[in-house]
Image (cartoon, rainbow, N blue to C red; front, side):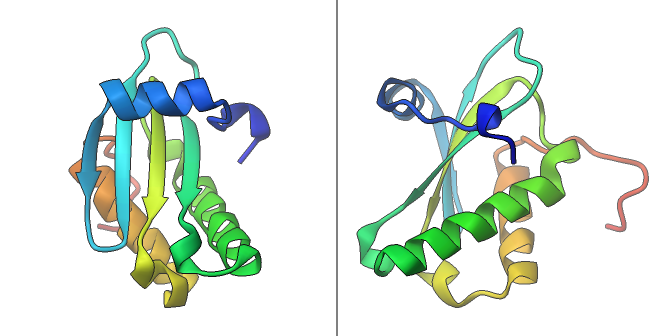
Length: 119
């Protein structure tokens, strides 16, 4: 995921939390804020210190970014979102992590249906 597609500033995070809507499953919480006139979605990742030390948290963030890369073409472009990892994510294999990300993004209504999907 390119850096320009990330939510980085504290102001943006606060706005998404305050104005955006939240959706959740057991592994993730997603806050979504619709932004018109945006060419590509932007994503912020939050991993609590409760999930582990810096090494563990960074590994989780890398795996979530990989999940966004796999789902990039299916996510609506006119949104900013923040995804928060919950405890079960620590031990999930990448395949299950992507599956759970797909589920929570579907619940949030962020995925575009594609004809070539294998669902």
